[in-house]
Image 1 (cartoon, rainbow, N blue to C red):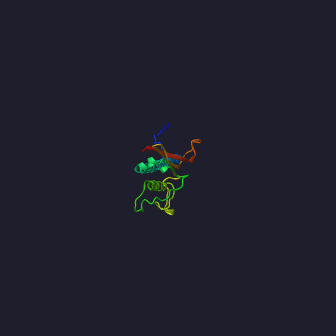
Image 2: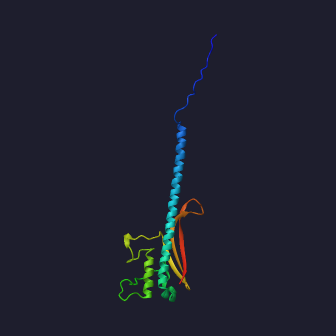
Image 3: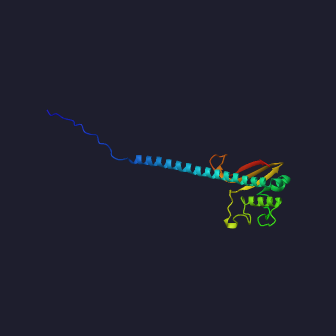
Length: 183
């Protein structure tokens, strides 16, 4: 009688990856990269928004400091520093820099508003003119109003933001920064 022997052999193991494993890895890698890109874009947008807010703060503080320097005239005439870059005409040149006799308080107020308006629109003779001009804030506007000894400076601009009604689409929204101060 013959005796059969069964040899215990090694099981063959597959070497390498299957096509399915490679495809799953590519899908996972792609989704991670898209997520990282989305985070980077959101970060850039938030940084741009923070930059605009800081510019608005600087612009508002600039005119507030100018009003405080000329506070005696500002206190005597509430309308001296009233200005709205959308509806008001750009003040005439106060000739404070070139006048030999110096600058009166009224001329200084006029010159301050003229230079401040340059933040929102191209004012001839102030800063860079024509093709070199760039507004500090996109769609920017500013206003100065007085009520008694309290002044309110408001700076507005537009930026892309989430549309709160649909919560998905981005839309241009108007943002604002307000600075209240007293003389």
